[in-house]
Length: 368
Image 1: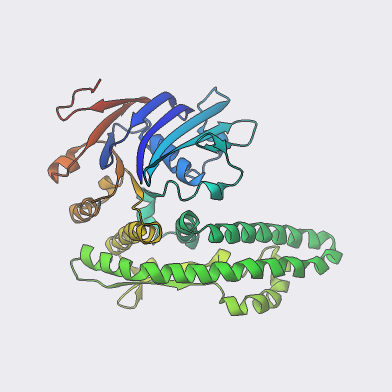
Image 2: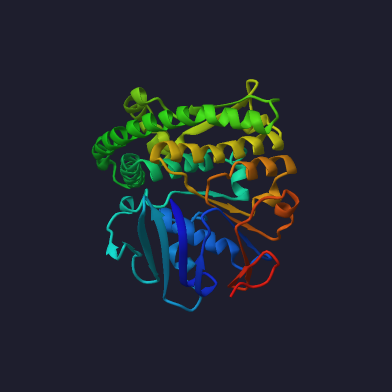
């Protein structure tokens, strides 16, 4: 799988942009607030239908315009795919693959598998459990359409149940409808719990080995699933918590409250780990995604690194750069010093200045 090119029209601070990527390493550099991350955001959107920032679609349209267009070209299994996105202020987004409109996001997943790594991801261990759940969901939704289906249905049932809990306060007779939403939560929730458990069991050995290598063999990290409720007890616990749910007008039990546990020598590093341990574990977790996608799809994903190098010490920088072999990588940064210092091979270099992108040669001259 190779991301070959992208065109932007009226996306964020780009009026028009056309960029051709190298199959190996691409560096996009420039001062802050010039538009580097906007390029990665457009690529991530093309693979997942969502912004990595959680931005609303209207926010991504260039100021003063009513719509935005993103066209991404991917080479996969010898076949070319053109992914077209139209974002509109007053209408739902439109997505087409090779000029054929699609109706569901699941039809897009699997064409362009992407891993996005930003400085915020280095805090995934110390941040709240919602960030770790998002990691699980974003990964599984790319490689497992059944999980995407179950998760979408679970979220809908959860939203409807919470809405009903609020309405029951004003109309107690609605309480008799509650078991219907309970049944849907249990039906889809049990499948989510089972798949998350299997996924984390699959990546745990890789995370442990990567952490061991980065720490120079000094630490053995252990990753494990921490479900809010075991699937076999989910239905009973929903009944047991019903009064509390009614009182608080929210669902207090289910996989929407799951977490991932990280331990070193039996110590929970989410609470008691040093920043170095937390960052090493976060780096191991993100890099484990590469092997998961490769083992599932048979292809390595595209890796997007958004100004991560500046947040890592030299040891972790070297390990990260050494892990990029055979992986198409697009890296944003403010300068090239770290790559020159580490003698890291760079295949294409682009400079971003105020929404304009210039390809540079090895001497720093603009490529025409």
